[in-house]
Length: 175
Ligand SMILES: Cc1cc2nc3c(=O)[nH]c(=O)nc-3n(C[C@H](O)[C@H](O)[C@H](O)COP(=O)(O)OP(=O)(O)OC[C@H]3O[C@@H](n4cnc5c(N)ncnc54)[C@H](O)[C@@H]3O)c2cc1C
Image 1 (cartoon, protein in one colour):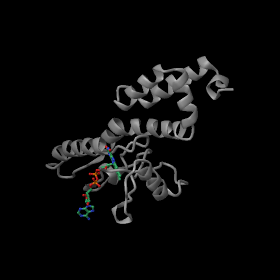
Image 2 (tube, protein in one colour):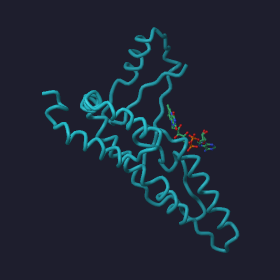
Image 3 (cartoon, helix red, strand yellow):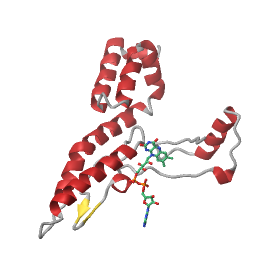
């Protein structure tokens, strides 16, 4: 079994003690040597991802989703885009990998900035979001669609905004 805790906030402290609390609550024993720590590098404002004959992909480019922390899909997608561009350029006298940066920005970058916005809005306001779902249960299905990538982050945030607008902030805050 793999058990973990994580945070998107640089201010988060005591993650190891939270992990131990979680393990205790599940009646599991975790010894210190079993605990590993790692970061998921995030880079939602993608700049240039190539230089001369080199390019960065996956975690090296910071392509993980700032809302879910998932980076396997974008690592594979960036590798696939890299291979397309390299195959085109490999025979050129002066290979130019600019197309790679453009493709990653187009296919991955737009989603990353939406995910960052969702992350900044939803995590600090998770209590409010929970109350919103209690009052508008259909939002749970919309959240599932977001996680299944059937809905974009920007669309989901707009849906949340509409629900809050219909309910009024007072009801969402439960006052
Ligand atoms: C705790 C945790 C849980 C996660 N859970 C999920 C999840 O559920 N779903 C998801 O989509 N993503 C998840 N991620 C993110 C995901 O693991 C990464 O985004 C993804 O693995 C990035 O792939 P990558 O190929 O870019 O890098 P990596 O998978 O890190 O691969 C890089 C490889 O290069 C090797 N390497 C490094 N330096 C050198 C060197 N100098 N020479 C040779 N080899 C070298 C490393 O050893 C490593 O094997 C999680 C990350 C963490 C830390």
